Length: 183
Image (cartoon, one colour):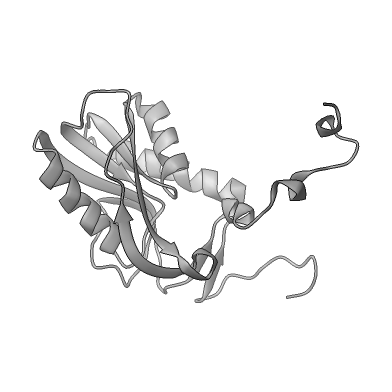
């Protein structure tokens, strides 16, 4: 790719700007709203679902819980490995109960969403219904999300706008002459 040239989407790569990313989140909110399903809690999967869960929580005025789950660590976060699910959920509300919307950025292989939902049903008997909401649904997925914005025809690596921070050092954000110079 030429220096300064915009990346081109293909079956192997999907490039997403901040503007597109926020528009997709808003489209997901509308999709969930139009379903007329009411829910009691939103559980977002960290890290990819954090921003999505935040917006859903604000717009629907529902408590937000956070569960860390990670499987993409090797090769700069591009190779899926062992799935780790955090022992605890962070929330300012009572334990998860009733109807819960699980939010993440995408369903890729489907293994994470499948295992997290099983984990929640085993550990939180007061959950009466779980539904899932994602921005992207890949065709290789073992599971189908309840709500999604884009069902992809291929299996591209999705380059999300926040990935620019992966591997970045704090000094790389320093700009001489900015307010950062004033200590």
